Length: 163
Image (cartoon, rainbow, N blue to C red; front, side):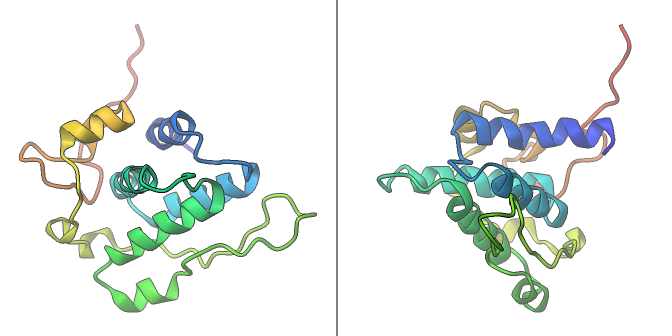
């Protein structure tokens, strides 16, 4: 994995660690999250995680671990205009055995990012609220008008400069 991809994935890891979303699922959670990140655009994953956190605040106790990610995955699937592809993606990972750490199955297919209509993604929070909840810069998820970015904006991540 290149350095830029690692940096963008750190944003998701920051959200997960801030809210201890992995629960007690450890490696299985990490594997599931990595598969989601292979399938969906980074900004959408961040939005789905944030929306699930907000929803989780109304549930006591808040779901964490694999059940939390299953909800995130379902939300991401609901944003897909290509229902055929969306229906082929499982709504959950099947943990094979408690003896096999992190063993999960998922038919990994990358979503065609060009088919995602950002205006069809309704979210219950503003860019400012996103920043307050996640502690992350909203400009990589929202445009100047507060509309959702379905893909990473071009040039948003600049190569690290030597000092």
